[in-house]
Length: 342
Image (cartoon, rainbow, N blue to C red; front, side, top):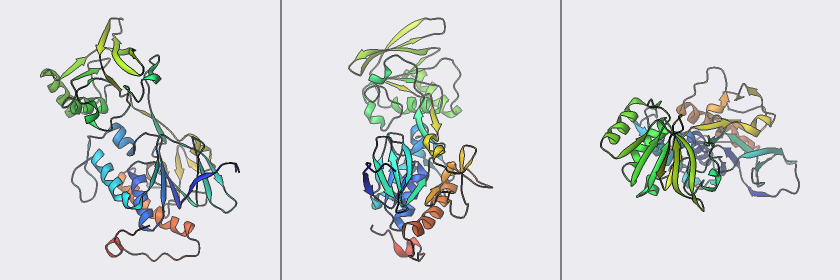
């Protein structure tokens, strides 16, 4: 271990991944009075649900016949809020170091360290980052007028917005932003989209009414502006015909790239690109380290959100013994305990 590294906080558990399963793990750990810090590579909580499918309905959450993905994330965050988790966003876990006292130091990409006896990996397919279009100087615009995910539609009220891509995110946000933006332009290299048919139908209906402009078949070619503020997005056809679209914001939706990255080098037993776990506890081969959700592998595994929720409960109960050696856990239902203070 790097002795010069000072942990930013001593906590009970570090949850790697702020998707729905990671957020529910915060709740389950909190119900056992275990404090959490949460690390995620994206700039907002919610994982793929928020980054790619915020307006898509989910139908298999028990007791809730239909719920939008973004609303599910909001409810999970609200459910976890009483336990005051600390969020470290736009960060990845670079190293996992074993301490002399048996705890772990989780080293983040910025060099920060978090010390905890328990680590819960809820990383899905790994740390997600956007597939950036190959545009010269795009870095100067990122976070100011180029965005790879939308936190709130209201942020684009009255703006001229260029959306690039042909998938669900492009179509869904084109429809949503048409309600608030001054102008929405959808750039795609071909007439055929790969989004859900109903999303495409809504988008094309708005295009027919003049609320969305379909810029087809064009591809992104260049950005024009100053000090991170866009003025124009230059697009070209495959034949080289160019257009300059007056714009205040560009939303390139070309998907996310997932990579387990450093996690795969921690000495954890793997099953292909997934992590082998004990199905009874979700424990990995490393003491105090658990894996839940899509990243966890065992015979008969179903990659469903509700499966991940159950795994979060199993891992939390197994983690209690790690965080509280020698202390018995007296299991009680939430109807008896309520939401405890920690």
